[in-house]
Amino acid sequence: MTDSLRLAVFGDPISHSLSPRIHSLFGQQLGLAVDYQAIRCTVQELPQRLEELVRAGGTGANLTLPLKQAGLRLCRQLDLPARLARAVNTLSLDEQGWRGFNTDGPGLVLDLERLGIRLGGTRILIIGAGGATAGILAPLLERRPACITLLNRTAERATLLAERYGHLGQILGLGLDAEPQGPPHDLLIQATSLGHAGAMPVIADDWLDQEARVYDLNYGPAHEPVARWAESRGLAAHDGIGMLVGQAALAFEIWSGQRPSISATLAELPRLAIS
Ligand code: ATR
Image 1 (cartoon, protein in one colour):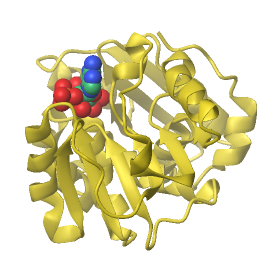
Image 2 (tube, protein in one colour):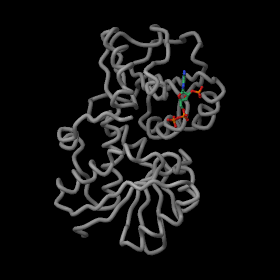
Image 3 (tube, protein in one colour):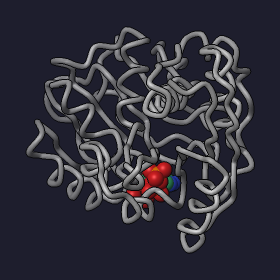
């Protein structure tokens, strides 16, 4: 088993990334020397940057925006979440080349478990039908929720995703202005980018049960609108920092064979502002 790892995250923008800090905490936790750099990189530059990483002794990488689709083409093998999401966030090198993984959705599921949020038999409401949602649908549906209702400003994107994932479970795609149907939902997952503009999508109260849990994929200041909205309704809200650490922990396990503790890492990670 290795006792040192050279790793990197590629993306653009990348300077705000918390990943170097998270992976260095993982290294400390597990007694491994971790050199994890954040490297700015465009889609065109990605093959070259990965080659440079390998020449420097690198064996693993994370990809973030806008590289998650571009990374697919560079992998000789993909795990099921990456194939279904059509995006990779983790690359791991072996003798034949890069293997690609998507740990975003599994990282969310891990964090929901940490928070004691049950998924089996649960009615889930997701707002937003962009790349973030595409990455989480398959791992959520694998846990057999009663249903997923997907609401999006652009109804067509929600219906397209619902069609794409419909073979995995009960999922309905609707416009944000749709009338609530059926019993209220037990879990709201906020997956729009609206928090970065200081706002939160308007959703009818009837969509949600009075005891519903709220999970926002955003963290830092972008989570504040959801936190305020949930508090005003007496609902428990969680930010997405645990998902960030969860997806990182699963990537680290792929590279090192050891899974770091999410809770111990969260305890040490200051809630840094993300711009
Ligand atoms: P990501 O990859 O982070 O999911 P994205 O693909 O750009 O980013 O998607 C952003 C999501 O936020 C989409 O669901 C988007 O709705 P549209 O599909 O209608 O664009 C949603 N979103 C962004 N701005 C919004 C706004 N002002 N009101 C409602 N939803 C918004």
